[in-house]
Image (cartoon, rainbow over all chains, first blue to last red):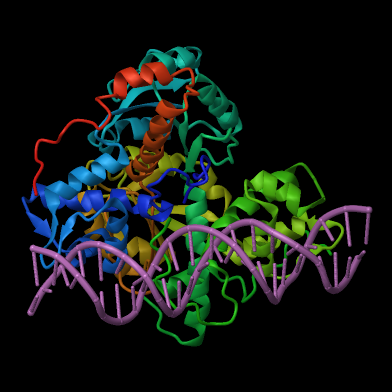
Length: 253
Length: 253
DNA sequence: TCGTGTGAATCACTTCACAGCT
DNA sequence: AGCTGTGAAGTGATTCACACGA
């Protein structure tokens, strides 16, 4: 998912498709695992399986980066790790601020995979004066008043928003005003940002709703051609309110 | 993003495009906000703005659900809320289990928006015997030994995995074995599941890497046609390691 | 022989633009 | 007059299938 694709209309020479960019981290993770097991080379077939995609897609994706494989052999693991890392901009480190140190913000601060790949938590910021000075994940939480100073001093270009939805937009504006140009939004709100700023969102509730949609379809089909699983019986008890659900309180036009 | 689209090859009559399904929750959220403000009707233009999409897309999306608008007027807010809710399967409630009650699992358990939309946390499950019996978000954590019983008794069809990556696949298999057919995976691993099971993943690290990719591009363009923001100067200090980054330790072929 | 790299074909999604209804 | 609903056109992504090089 994403709200990305804000900036340029894909000008400047090497245009890697957005869908490909979104898969590069997947390949990188699979390659890193191979690298740790000292596997020297890998075929598109093997790597694709490890990354959970099909091999044609993977080869096409890599073709946008250049010809990094060897016909009849496969890809050199270490070399690919480097090329993809460079393409993704992971050979430099990215200071990141997390704004909103509630349950989720704290969980993210503690999340290990954060630091591993070139991302460094430069600061934790919260609006609550009570939080300021507290240690979370070994980092001292700072008050929002410091936001602009912190961003400017550390050259932060990526901000993570884990505030309640009500304040997310204004936090976003302060981040952008202070120089942040990429935002990862965990608050369930649509953020509006000026051109040139990328926003990606992560939304538990949306993901669950999408799953529920498909789940519902499955339940429908089950009724026709029954191949019910172990939990299906109990599920019917808890879920079924008739074939079409109840009529809503309000039901106009 | 998603790994969805596992089941049927879009057979059976009413095929709503996956991209549309992914936007329905956004519309629903915008509509719910309007509903709370007692706004009776809304035009595609207004609603699209609130949901952060363009109006043509929104109208096309709604056209897959049916003709729920009135030409010259717009859409009835309450009616649409109901129709979308029903389409998404939110008129029934979905018991959900969260497996892996670390920082993130606990944060999700505490997350309010969870319960709001038809999702109910039926159980929190952790492999650590120390965790069992503890209260998190007002719910008693249970040991993994209970997993199958819980899923079957509550008719759980949706599972959320917030374990460390190393155990995610085996947790996934137990969930599926016990009857779960939709999985939301927060562990940074590719899960493999049998046909008929949907997996969606949420991965902080991947999102950040995608942002970094675009961020890097921006930095490149900045150099050419300079329109640097406040934090750009400091960023250059902290990030630039030369125009092409350092040469990696290993650099084969 | 084997597996990459890639044009060509297909499929999915988006945007356009306007007919049709209120 | 205004706004929805939708064919048609356009764009982007995936898959196919095979030429090419090691």
